[in-house]
Length: 146
Length: 171
Image (tube, rainbow over all chains, first blue to last red; front, side, top):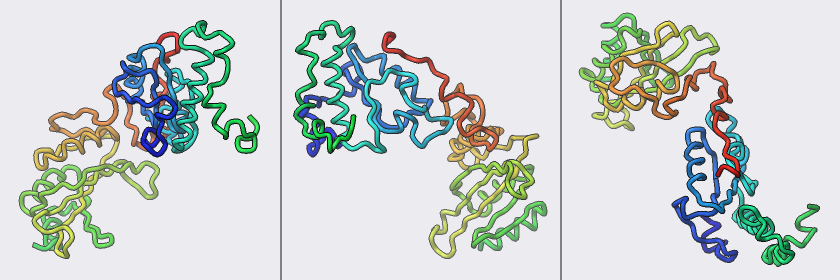
């Protein structure tokens, strides 16, 4: 919510329009615990989305189950649906989610949508401009060894 | 009628009922055969018109415990304001064991017991006789087992992993 609101303003990076129908979406952000009763629903939502589509697993709970190591909580949605980006954190900062969306845009730019063949040209193999221009990415002191 | 008088009248009428006090709270330990009659009397004669909560405790491996399950009925009298000195609240306990895990439903007395009894059935597997619609309420219908029992493994019996895997190619 904070990511899309005015303080962090996801629209600056070309991703803003939230849709509440899976048929109008190309990115699913799974935020929070997924219990075994809801996992078939999540899988159905994923199957209702049209290609091309991507998935972000946001937060420790969606990625691994987090502290909820119980009978009812799925221990990571990537066991049952494909995941493109994982956002660590409990909860993640809005900056982390923005970074994940930028990284996903970079991944799409390099790999393409379905087969990726249409993007196998040298000009598309460059990192996304927003990633190069964000100072924290090119600063090894701030980021550390990658 | 004061709570003390009520409890005294009840224990005189039903000698099998054990009364105890803890930090100002009065508790009655009731044999399961007398439970429904006592709860009906509490509602209709003594004015406990609100079933605050109905829940269950599994005393498996509990220190000094004799019986397996303890059903807890928390009753209140809404005619007397709950936060005044004259408030009347009462805890009724019924102990159950594995040999007979059923108890008469109190939905006829307090309609609000409906979902509470369904939850106790869902989590502990205790059958309430005469319940109008005794189904699971939280867990999916196809779930087997009763997960709040102490002998149920915390990480389950694989139900959290028992799903088809959707791959990128299928989607």
